[in-house]
Length: 206
Image (cartoon, rainbow, N blue to C red):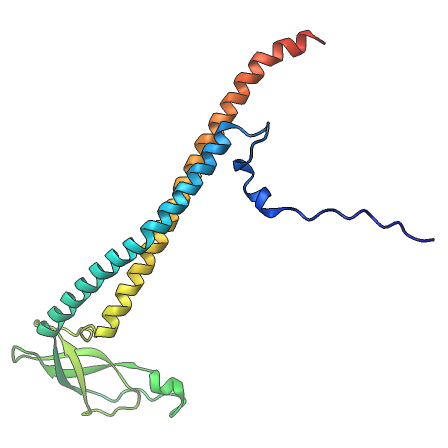
């Protein structure tokens, strides 16, 4: 027995579905059109604000990073230190992991003020006692990180700029969600009021 072929459904007109709030129809409420305008306004505002915010935040972060790097270069010192005891050996010498591995070892060094100090420092595996490594210390003789490089300053500025762009988008989405919530509450209030006017007549006609 031949099977009946179901009738073909016309493909949905996606633009009409997505833009239904803009089309005149008897079911469209004033709040639907207001929500459409609010969404469009927020979308355009986010598009316009994002580049400006990214540039402002990026340049501010880059300037602050350069200032921080200059201060670090002026207050941090690259000095030699001597291992007090042997560093542990890596289980896989010569491997890529061994090249990246660091182990905490006690080292002895002379700080910028001329005082001899000892501290724990991360060094390469298998270094023997008496080996010399170079460390960064601050003006107080405490171990610290190397000053920021120009590449690190740029990377941080780009990161802050991207974060600022995401924040603008999230604020736009939050504003739209808030507007949608308020409009939905308004719709429900109008529906309740309309039902309060209609219900007595509808129940009386039964």
